[in-house]
Length: 67
Image 1 (tube, one colour):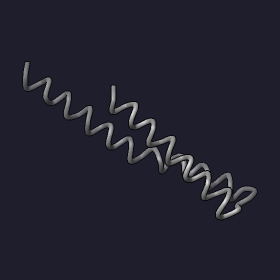
Image 2 (image 1 turned 180 degrees about the vertical axis):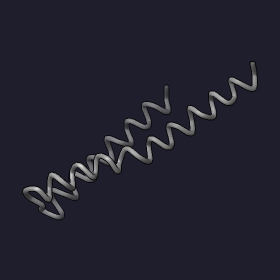
Image 3 (image 1 turned 45 degrees about the vertical axis):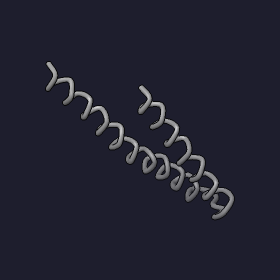
């Protein structure tokens, strides 16, 4: 449960950083801003997906070996 909460926190943090970069540093507008925001959300989900998957996989393998 803790790893899930930490994963969600990481995603929210990465999306906030991406929003700052897109809006304040790069000053993107129009379709380029929309495209960049969409890609930022997708890219921020992948590292957390693999991290959370590895934690869940380790827990399930430990449960299987103890049964």
